[in-house]
Length: 631
Image 1: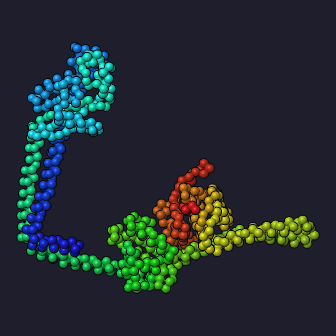
Image 2 (image 1 turned 180 degrees about the vertical axis):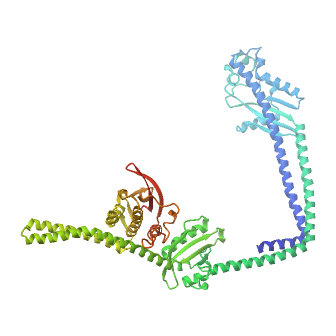
Image 3 (image 1 turned 30 degrees about the vertical axis):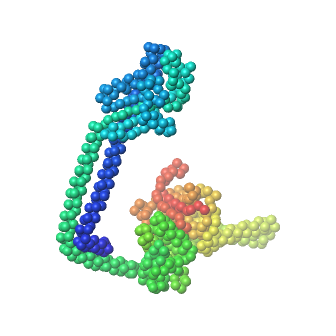
């Protein structure tokens, strides 16, 4: 803004001192512009004259040619015998007489002639100038007309006449011509199709039309000169006014510049204060990846001083090399094309590195306003170490709640096998004492005890795999993982009289974290279980469906518990939100499920209330849909 006012100020001072030279220069430039326009109009006027003449004479020649063709066609169509009486109706006679009569009617202002270098009628013999035109057409077969401007607004237009198939009847071999033609004419035979037979010429005087066009052009010249003079006078007086008021204007302008400078300095200080006091690290880089801004929070988070970073392309020191190359690739494309991509205007969680080479989690959002070579990209960075720790605590809390439920499930699942083992063992002892324990009965009892202990062992393995909580990225079958989850909650679904229906695509395989996905399934099931406790015990249903939609995997949990109230359905994924009493729930389950799906697996999770029919009965319930990328 300061530069803008400064330029205006300098220009006005220059006008004050050099106004006469500028005025003269401006007058010369304007004269050249107007002169060029008038010259262009002159050529346009000239071209317009030629177009008018050409169109008119071309129409006249077409008319004459039509007469000639009509007479010729009559003789051919009606097979008229050419004799002493009809020969004078041939085009060679009639066209000449029609042209002469036409010229006479126009007062000889338009003269039409049809001539040849080998005419049958001596009156149609071409003169010296016409013979030159015939030579021109013989040399230039592709030319369709000849046009020339003579003196005193007189124009000369010529069109060639070429031999066609119909012409050969009279101008081919003499022996093939009608007898009357052979007897009357000894020449103008031996032509072939495409030979030049002759030319039709029109000499036309357009004094009246040309005069009107010239008058119009002169009016344009007068208007242009008048406007030129008036405009120069207006510019001159305008410059004089500027000169007269320049001192007052300069003083006012200088005051505005000073005021604007103060405002810009204040704005600069304000922006600097915002950047430096920001609770996030603010780092700006230019198209050469050199750091232009590096605030106090950036110094605290990364440990490098501002003097160590400003002016250097040290972004690689702050971001793990796992992400750096990808970031630079996207930024390079943006700087070169201005096209936004997935890293711009989005938030990312990546790994940062401080000056002690220690890695820690950071959240980065990148913004920019493209301005060619002046483009600056702003990185807004926050250290989320504490947030990640808090998330881990929340995750562990949620898992502990699930573990408590799982222990209850295991205890319930173990009751029957333990009872069977106890009864079998005491029964075997009693049978032994009574002497009725045969070998066959002994082996049966031992097999029964072994089967139940194997069941207990398998239950322990399922629970142990869940408890370990290892975050291991691996390829796994989705149906197998859901079946394992169903075994974990088997006792719970039985104790709450819940019937689970499965509709799986057994071919689906995912590359992800199966243990975390199981945690999500448990949280969703627990939400449905709590809701189903409030309805009739006979019809408590949970439906689990897996399918592939385009390149996405959909995992759908649906219950018939009546749905989630509309005023709270939008809050179910918020931390600590629960509709249960504090002693019954923490509100962490669905919140952690949302984080595990969206942040840990780059998927999405949705919830909605639905109406559906099962076994001819209508139900209302909640539907949770997990969407993951198919490998």
